[in-house]
Structures are given as structure tokens and as C-alpha cells.
Image: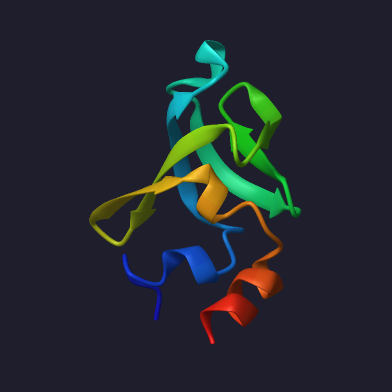
Length: 88
């Protein structure tokens, strides 16, 4: 079960996310469903189409059930299986 404490070791695909801080000001407020992720990028399906966004350059807010969780992109800037491996 995904919780606020273990979010960074889970697969992000399928989650709702919003960028709340970024080195690229035009990305702030961008939100949508994560369709894919690589080591350093997220494919975010927004109302204006698919956007590829660097993980580490932003601060992300994820919706887990009714909880909003804020994560610095550097904490998730790895492949999902590498994040899982580091947690063990």
C-alpha cells in the first residue's frame, strides 16, 4: 500500500501530480496523470497534451487517496526499481 512515507519507492505511473516549484517557471501549476517515467523524466498527461518534464528540476505534489504529498524531484530522479532497491 502506498503511503506518504513510502511514495518515493513506488512506481509513479498512474498517479495524479502537480508541479508546485520549478527552475522553469512556466511549469509551475502544471498538473495531470503520469503516463510514463524514466530515470530522469516524467511523461505527464495534461489537459493540453503530453508533456515531458525533468524530475529533478521540480518539486512535485502527488495525490494519495485524499492526502497531498510534496516531494523534491531529486528524491525520485531514479528508475522506479532503483528507488525500491535503495529502500531495502
